[in-house]
Length: 140
Image (tube, rainbow, N blue to C red; front, side, top):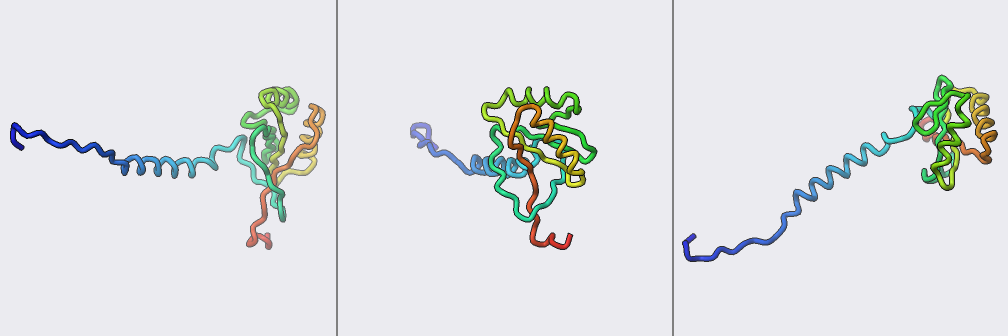
């Protein structure tokens, strides 16, 4: 470079680092999305062909763990507080749908008791969540 000459400036944007960062963030979100479920870890019962579960908007998730503990979304509640806690969770939703996710080792009696408590709170048509049986699991 000489002192009297003007230099030409490059005005191009290098997008390669931006694309790298976006792809890494996409992979992180894809890995973490299944881990962001509400409620306790529950082993779902297997069925031959469950119906479409639908989206999660407006859905109040009632979970029953292996020990019979009741959860509403991600908060554990006692049987005595269940009705009030369910009404409080429903107050935040515009079109609430109550869905039960029970552990596979539970007696149906425990699931039915939760369904009756939900009906006493004023809901009709409670949904149940099940897991589809894979083709290799027929011998279980």
